[in-house]
Image (cartoon, rainbow, N blue to C red; front, side, top):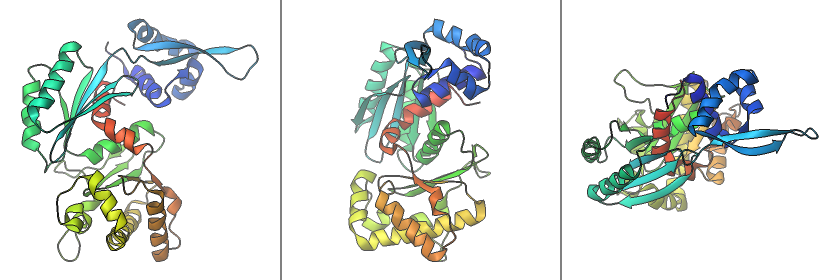
Length: 328
C-alpha cells in the first residue's frame, strides 16, 4: 500500500502512542473527524491499522474506538555491525522486537536474513555500520541481499540513527544535541528538525573537535585510549565507571564540550545516550561539573535518552521503519 504524507503521519503517531482514538489523532493532526476517516478507512481495510476496541473518554456512557498498528501486517529486518560480530534483528509493525541474533560470520547473518525474506517479504531492511568497522563486510552482505530484496538502506553512523529515532518519537523538539559515549564519543545535532551535516556529507560531531595537542576529543576519552584496547560498550562501560580517575577524565571532557556546544548553538535540549551516560549518578556528576564552571548554565536541559537499551537494540529495524514510513 502506497501511503500519502498524512497517512505516514498517522503511522508515526500510532508507533509513538501505541494506540489512539480517532479523536486523539484528529487533534494531533489538526483534521476534522470526517477528514481523518478518509485517510484511515483504506488503512483499516488494508489491515495496516486495526480497531482494538473501545475505551472510555471520561464522559458517562461514551466510549471511543481505539486504533493501533497491526503487528501482523509486516516486519522489518536490521543488521547492526560491531567490530567482531553482526547483530540481526527483526521487529514487527508495532515496534516490538521479535528477535535479536548474533553472528560472528557473514554467512550466518546472510542465511538468517535469507530465511526471513523467503518466509514473507519484509517492509524494509536496514544496515548500520561504523565507517571504521566492517565497512567492506557490510557492503558485501548488502550486495548478496540485493539478489533477494530490491533495496537495503544503510547508515554509516549509529549515533545519527539514534538521533533519527529520538526525533521520530519527539517531533515537538526540533533542536537538540544527542551525545553518545562508548566505545567512542559521537553526537548528532538537530537544528530545525534536521541533522547538521558538513559539506562532505559527514555528520558534525563533538567527538571530532580538535584539542590543543592536535588530537580529538574522541581520542582523549575513547575506550581504546582509556583502556588501551578495542572493547565493546557493554564490556568497557563498567570498567570506566569503576575507575575514578578515568571517570573523572570523561566527565570533565564531556562537561567542557557541552559548554562549548551550548555557547555556539544555544541548545534547547541535550540528551545523553550510551550505557555510561544513562546512569543517573553520572548525569548528576556532569551537571555538577558544569555548574562549577558556569553557575548560570541551565543543567535541567540535560536528560537521559529514554528507553535507551530497547531502542538501541531495535535501531536498525527502526531505521528501516522510517524509510518505509518517512516523516515528510
